[in-house]
Image 1 (tube, protein in one colour):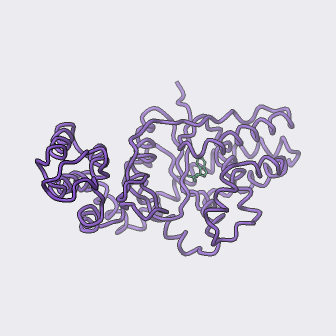
Image 2 (image 1 turned 90 degrees about the vertical axis):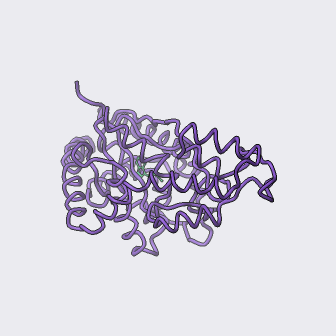
Image 3 (image 1 turned 180 degrees about the vertical axis):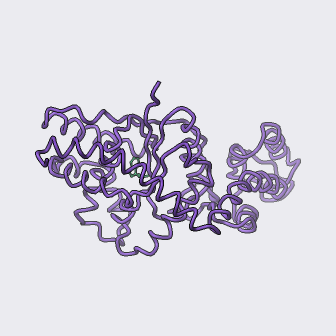
Length: 330
Ligand code: TRP
């Protein structure tokens, strides 16, 4: 039986942290078992907000591709590529922009939110408004059925369905299937300060952090239960960001041990942190090894991107033939 197609992308703006790894990438890795997966680095999307800093985007694009492979995406099994290396996405973005009502775009919640959150950047740009149109092109050009994304991306997917349907309806063709968001449950990753781990909160542990940096961040900056002022004070593990991260990285036995130790003041916060550090480092070790391997071999990395993008372009071009025909361009 033919495998169903999964597609997802990540914008290359900034470094990846443990939250991205646990939340998105490990899910992508798992999906490779059952689906025909397409995963890509959305460097054009990064330009919609980062257009004034192209050198940063270039670095992020490279780093993101490295992380994809280091986390376990397999170029032999999945199609892994870079958006700007498949120019058909841009052509479809243009053609879809002809049939996308402005009102639909202005209503997308991220449109206003991002403008407010990134006040220092001028986002009153045509390309920024069209962000979800480009995202729609990314998805439907591969006729992907399932799109694994976080909950924040659901409004974009809703819009993608609307645009795909409008296209099919206008041109009386059934070219694009309905793309569906694929929401999966994954553990929430808590940041150093107890809030959700996020680049913008400055509370993250990055995949590119060296072991010493990870150790320093957890040992010296991560918050614990404020009730445990002294070593002898009893605490509540649920109040401690350290315990929250133990939930992701430690075994059930260790989890029980640190919870009990916290409640009874049997162990100190430093002991608890040291156990966490050991487990985080153990989990990251193989990822770091693969990262270093790829970073020291840029030719191989480029080859992965080139081959993946060629594979993607062949599929994208076949869809574009149908699209051009439907729109009277052939
Ligand atoms: N908007 C997505 C994000 O910010 C990235 C993205 C671009 C994407 N194109 C996509 C995700 C297509 C899924 C499908 O993470």
